[in-house]
Length: 380
Image (cartoon, rainbow, N blue to C red; front, top):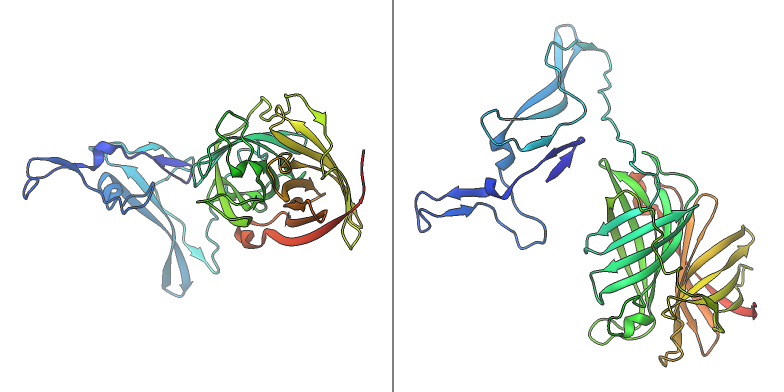
């Protein structure tokens, strides 16, 4: 299925089947395409052109005395009347046959219509190129959800975060920050990744008439996972596409019993430039994960934070406790992730900051920095 210009072309498997008339496979009906060895990608050749005909539209431009030029406007596809109807949904803009006026002087061709975003919120179900799926709900500008991974360990995992207060537009994305706790919410066998967390930051943009959620991803591996990864922070860029527009039922682990716990992360932490994190840790989802709430304050003001931390680090015999928290500024969002060194009592965090950016400038949508926080007191 191919979609563009609000239209849709559907190519069924039977269209690729061809009766072989000569050669070693004579008499057999075989599909005529090459898989190329890549997932979800095949070489379709001239199949579309075999079943469609095209009309090329031009603008006639008078450049001078008896001097004319043709400026291309677009190409229109139509089903062949005697063939399979592979165009299954027409574009909203119709082709109108007839004479066209001659343009004179400087010509600005009609701009391609920009389809507005179907939704200005991250609420809904999203799928990335790895096949992982997350279902998110939004209350105010706070995000909660469930993540279904298809890489590494499989299972369901809790998500929290924020989207910016400003809605996305055709010329500007909407920043989003997420935190994920990789302690499974199900009954899968435990593995080292259950001690890990992730921070993600980016924005929803309109890319070729499609909503795309593009996030920079920092995976905080606080311990070795033999055969998979060594301890450290891993960097990736994830692109998600919307599967469904909205979810009304809250999708997270908040329905389980919560209780404040005595955790090394609980307290007040400050950087040399006077940014202060005031954090409280609660046990969620029957003690499977640690939920972090609190406030980030400093010279630029104060903001609420929401995230996760590994409440099983001590009992797992680790010296590092992974942490991922998120916050929302007036125009942007932040994702802070890293580890608390349980021996030195120092909190080292990488900070992803995203502000609204045009879709053509996504390569500068997320800025990476770092901060070292030291304890200045215990917060009750």
